[in-house]
Image 1 (cartoon, rainbow, N blue to C red):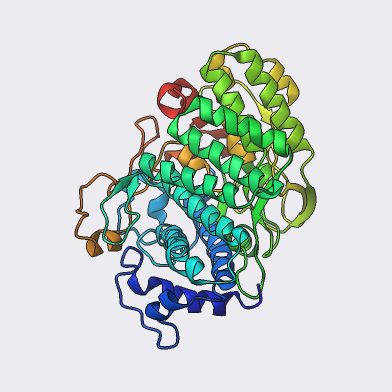
Image 2 (image 1 turned 60 degrees about the vertical axis):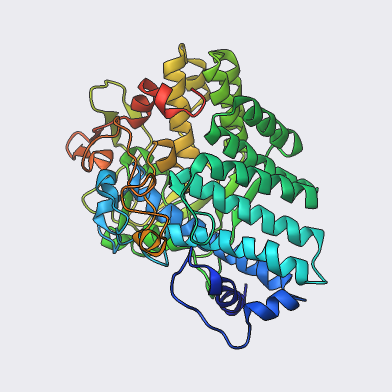
Amino acid sequence: MKKLLYILFIFATAFLTSCELIDPTEVENPAITEDKLFEDATGGAAPLIVGLQYSFSDALMKTITYTEVTSDNYDNTNTFLSNIIDNPRDILPNETQLDDTREIYFELQTIHAKALFGIEVILPKDANATSDDYSEVYFYKGMALLMLSENFSAFPIKEGGIMVKSEEALTIAINDLKQSIDYNGSSDNISRCYLALARAYRLLGDKNSAFDYASLAIATNSNFLFAAQYDAANLDNELYTFTVARANTNDMQPLPSLDFLDPKYPDEVSEIPALKSEEAYLILSEIALANNDLASAKEQLKNTLTLVKNRSIVEFNDRDPRTDRPNDNSCIVVFNNSSIQYSGLIKKRSNNPVQIGIVSNTSITEQNINDLANITDAFELLYKMRQEVFFCEGRRMSDLGIRLPVMQTQIDANSNINNGDYGTSVIVPSYIPFGYGLDEFSYDDNSKIVTIQYNMNQIIALNISTASPFL
């Protein structure tokens, strides 16, 4: 990745010249013009793909930073991030970290615009372009639309275009991912595309297709991992900065019930999981529960647990003082209005070693799964496992049913979009607590008891007909 920034600059200026969808300002580069690229883009595929890989890593990181704070996973205690994103109902299109050309919406749209330009202009005019090149570009195009659909209810996908609902964008993403497979049938590409397809079909509520692709993903590779890459010279992992490098200033802190999962990324070059086999098992479990098949759901939950236990664990000497936070191995976690006590969720920090699951981890045990006696409790455990397994991977906000508005700059630049249109306002389900309730907890230092105000996984289970895409 030594030349990533230079390559990204060259292609970004060329690609975005005609992309008012992304940036309505005019960009000019006398060395590389759009007309020249239309005539001859020989050799263009390689930097195009490197640029897409860079953009994907950047977009995934920024999506995680924003959505983890918006969800109940992290509390923004003292960062430059807007405090508004901790209170999702107050999020507006002009919110600082949303209406910014360095943040989540812009970054995801940038990937899509680059990939589309690559498919329509660069690759057809590059005599050296290969099937693998086409496959890569279609993959990243599909992933951009998938991630946009997870986090936004509607958005344009063409320059000056109308708002497209996430359901329609997902069907395009599905076609892109299938195209990627058509161009490259290698095991690794098939595995990541099958997982992405299962994820897309889940969002659409298509049980049959989600089941098929989740099953295919497992059959192809039952412990697959596709991760975004980072390096200190060009693009470091900002999640490390928030959760480790600045921890002594009490920046981003996890909900106490998730303390044992933090920090997910112990150094600045830690890779971030983007697609992994755990997803397939969890999708199969959710489908089984939607079909009232508790036995099959338990089996798939156990399969997930087995895989998680085989993922890498590293020891990390955590210097985080956890100021004004529980910071003791003896702490007990309870949820408001519940007598169940959870131990082992909070780890002693302050220059003490902690065991960190850098791919996946969970507090769920096989006994917890065996004890499930009804569908509602099983849904609660499933969503708890999803929360823990996908912790700090940008998935929880979507699971909570929250969808962000498109950025104000997008609305202002596109004559087909007006404030008040579908997709220009945040969507927050009625079961989400008001204000900063997602992060609320109390701590008694004498009893070492931490009480979390809202058990969101239980709330999801009680509202599962709305929360689960399959119901």
